[in-house]
Image (cartoon, rainbow over all chains, first blue to last red; front, top):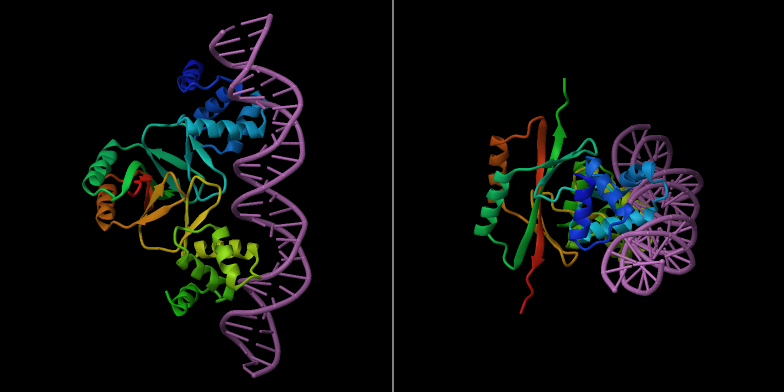
Length: 140
Length: 140
DNA sequence: ACTTATATGAGAATAATTCTTATTTAAGAA
DNA sequence: TTCTTAAATAAGAATTATTCTCATATAAGT
């Protein structure tokens, strides 16, 4: 993801391009494993020590509203964020904080067909995310 | 769910039976829509005004550890809890706080077969929860 | 360069949850 | 039944995550 591409994501949504917004998006793309706001703040402060905590939370909210990033739900108190907007699922390791992305077009088609057939009365499905919970095997 | 059944859930796990634990489990079973800790506290205080906030959080943690209840992940800051331990999924209304349970054995079998065939290398799946996101249609 | 609506920084405020410690209590033993 | 003790609770302080307020700064169109 180049600086120019990040800039375009903002302008395409009619958002002003600010150094803070650029830095926050760049942080999310570079920090793997679905960073928390705190992870993002720590990362940005290395290059940009004056960024305000409140600004990061504000910008994250704006980015979610504008569908440039997504929230990732967890059983912990701190929200985590995801810069990958293509349809995908999440593999949660029960023993660590690791959340891996899981892309599977075959599965997505299967689910789409399944819920076309068996529609939920009175409900319009917009997105289905699998939370795949378990543990990674130890490596020997 | 009778008082006796709730009591047995605790003793079966080797947990001491206390009025607080009984009240919290009863609250979760009676309060529909996956209550927050605050919902539970408000409910219990009607009958039992002296219960301490910290106790409720402590007990909720114990109940989750002992697999008597589950946490429900959301995009909001407050955690929500679920007393239904049978395998099921969640329908999230994007416009309200409503989270509906979705039971579907056919779907569960489909998923189980799918992930037997296509296993995730190095990962042992323990549970798969669908987060079905969308909106309920307005009633006329 | 000028203007103005919007974004940011700083820090206070709030909300959700956890921690600490003295006291109480459940449940097994005597 | 009473005794014992490890575990649970109440009360409130402390911590953590997030939001809010408002004065100042700035992006982007004129």
